[in-house]
Length: 294
Image 1 (tube, rainbow, N blue to C red):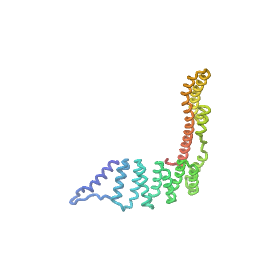
Image 2: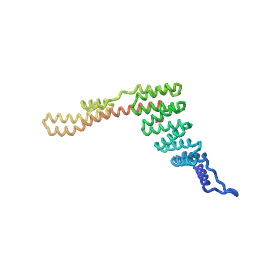
Image 3: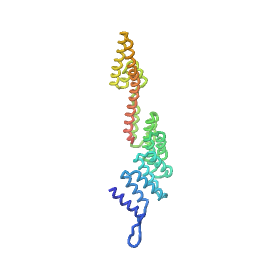
Image 4: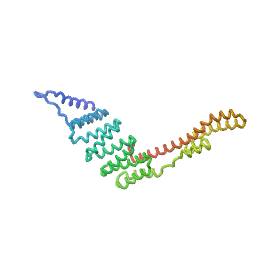
């Protein structure tokens, strides 16, 4: 069906270039803003994102004073997002808030601009964009959503106190919002963050007893394996020294030394991975609680 629509629209455009004779006079279809928008929409529906952008941009060129210009800019941003061109999408959304601050698309464009920066891991710009939506359009449906997303952006910046403050600001600013319970649930999750494992402690424990640091970090199999391997090398070195076979003791010790050092480094790394996994799990739970897109 979409392809049929595209064919009709393309024929209509060709008719503008080479008008078809109708009766005694030559007439052609008039290219309108609505027709240009529909052509872009048809390409967008077919996932032809860049062709859709081209058609929307034609509207901006052909009808620069049209009241649909802001709609075209928003659709350009949407097409860029779907085509994973986030930089270009952010610029298109930003142009709406700059050129048409009173547009009905402005709050949503500002929100989408922030999401683009967030996906690009440009947390400062994402936070600024979300806060602009809250400040400029506090009564819009996007403002409370933006405030909730700001809390997650702060979490991604590893600033847990700031994330809590943003959720508390949401509760103060929008006490009747239907997501108040979700915000309180997210606050509870942040208050219950599991204890972190210290990489320094893990390394120190493995230096005292190989494998102990891995066990401390929750990597029990790695800890047992490290204890067994290092125990063999240490035992072999000690036995060789007791038998005054210093050459063998030296060889076994040299071979075993990298395993011992690796055991210390591995324990510290295991603690770091533990912290990352705990934080990722917590972040996921908070995102689900807040119904966040990321």
